[in-house]
Length: 473
Length: 160
Image (cartoon, rainbow over all chains, first blue to last red; front, top):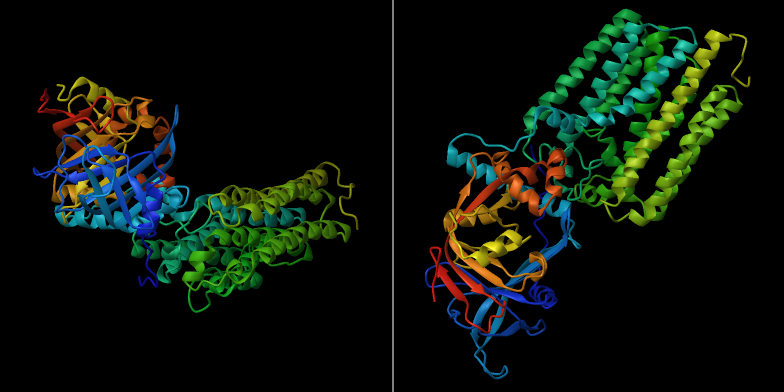
């Protein structure tokens, strides 16, 4: 594994910022190390001069502050939330050297403090998830040291089920299952259905996607993109299992290989069972698109071609592939037309998920569309593509390529509108975008399921009332 | 067995956050806000491996202090305390060893139990080590005001 970039550390805090922040706390915690070597902390009310890099406070009674060692002033805040816990976490510490003050008020002795360095965290500025992400290197360092100490590898863990879910990104399988089942349904409408090969197709196609998901992590890690991403979400930034030390790079590469080999074997089996040259071509193109998505030399997603690759792979290739398995190679326009809205909507999943990743992607040279394009352009493209997806359904029905019940897919359009409206206000907030990304996944899923429902209506109608024509032409 | 004066125990039990100070390799104090968990004898804190630098410091120098200073975090109490003690890191099982403290933790942060069910979302946060502090000496400011000398108690007995 050759990471191109290293994860930046927690943002630095300069002295002026540190003191300015410290001055906002109602009191400061003076801490020093006593002659016995133990720290002592006491709350003081410091007068802080951020511009002058200093602070002054009354010497706490009964305690002797050393003047030959650094002491610290800390501000800390949380807001209790009864029944839940707390929020508004922030703290700052400024270290410096104390000295007897000569120009500060009367009364008991005063101490002046010359600041030397500062450190802190405010979750309003660096959200907790980003702070955690920035700290993954520290976790790795901890486990490495513990492993050396014990003489045996110690690693973070997850239960096998959770690990499998996270590693393979299993919930995203809907991107495969929707077009494949739709292709099978259209073939069934055309009089071709074989349960065994249908099941094999779903399994084989799912294995291709699982291979793609895992390979994506492998190649993004190798090229530094996942390491450079400091704001991953559950929809973006990869599975992170390599970054977190849950699975090794080598294990992930092996897992991707297993998925692809298993998919290939099922593909060969299907070829042998159905004898379709079209399936062979679709399989080969699908493999190239899948592996070339992140792998050199093609690296489609690094060249701003990820959306096209995903649209082709999870649209026409999946749907037509499933169709030709059932029809033994016979092709038709109907599955191709039906695949187009699915293709656009699945591409929009990737497209929106790339928005929060764009800074890390840019650092790693991953020139996705949100990296290349301005915010207004990115949002405008989303709107045009979403409208186009639904327009294709309508036009497909009008020209007689899609059945009238396919219009059910339009019921998912309000979700696309919701995504469109959510993009602008959350564009620069990865965690705010999470809800939008979630709805965007539903747009594809629901549109696909509604298309499928439309075909089920056609199939049922065909069985019960063969004379009823559900096509306009 | 109680090792601390009653008012300080009450502060520990009430505190949603305290300030753990450790001493780094250069002899400088480093302060971290953490939830203090008290079992009547020892003070426990937990640290995710994500934020484990404090554990490195403790392994290098076990002399620490825990202060409770924030009236907001102790339900409006105005008294303050600092407890000095010897800390050790318990890290036999970072994955689940810390969960024995979950009942005490949950009393202060009820949502932690829900978050634990979602550990797949943030797995490293729930890889945690325990910090066990054996109190040695305590400073107590009944009115929280540093202009008066603190009451100092050692080894569980009040001193002058």
